[in-house]
Image 1 (cartoon, rainbow, N blue to C red):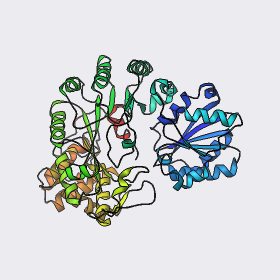
Image 2: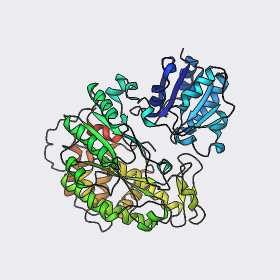
Image 3: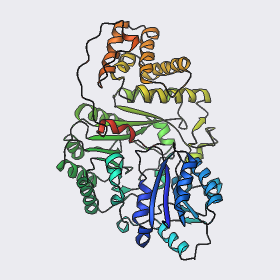
Length: 510
């Protein structure tokens, strides 16, 4: 039996717990007596409990995040009943701040706040030696990155074959955006470049072709980012896929020259716009030059083959529905492949709470602590945006309705308001946001185009048929059978592990 079990509930099977692999890699002499057990939030808690109890570890370490805190709280409560002698240690962003206000911290034996790469090992040593700390809350010292054992050898063959491989060249963020936990992670620290690239080569040698960089600001240190891009360019081959999070107003020519050289399907940039309202940006301590952002987005779409995943946040203090609509329309005109519409969350520890009184910010008390209303956006308006965000993900971001979406929105003075009209109509028609089959969604889009927008049925049918058959579908849906439509062009579907099929799972679950 293992002395130490590291565990968490991931959002889905394709995700791997990067943090747990760091803890395992840095356990030193305890490494061989430890293992990782990963589950998902969709697993039955009774089955998870039984599996943990079967191992009867001396110590269980839990990685706690906004998407799993409620479930892990229940799991720990049961574990304390069944394995009362097992020491429960929790860590992660959800328990690193406001620790005295949470049920889960009352249930656990120890809470490690911050980066626990070394602190968890030291705690385990003391517990196993019979000299456990008297203090329950342990504040981890910021580790020097050059002293860490990196976790890349902890990825299994199954991970390499079927799951997302996370990597990082740096930790921290230089910015102070008040809605984000990264604002608390100053300064930015770099891993030794030579050591990092050596690890990337080892992953390539093992067959890894898809890398998700978790660096918050990949293009902050241009020397490092250029070296990493050049490294992968020198090893470019079919199937290579790299995901980076970029600062939107920092793309000097030296970086552009490298980006241009990557072929279609090789690069995905996650670009957090969050808001185009300068006053809101100032209010939440987010500073970006939106004119440069526009120019960079334009360049990326016109002169590169990068897949752009962009982000906007609804519900920020000072931002009305109309202001958000203007920002969405501005971003939509750049035609990024994805616009992720997020709802503001009151993450523990973030300074966004300083606006609560002035802007009458009201948040849900349950994870993920989303905004319910504020002075400029009422509850019903935010509910409309939630529906918008869900349906936009199904129609706008899925890639299934590329031409149909353009037919619906391109001629509209406000794409946001028109899609909001569609989302309200769809919700009234379906009475649900989830579990709408793809073929039913195609039919509903057809109905909206023809009944609500008065587009000629033949034009709508031809456009939807082109979208429907683009990925290789051959069956003609019942609602299109009355139309004379061309035979679909033969197309080989991308393999399950291709970048195009995988990128939809790369976004963080929160």
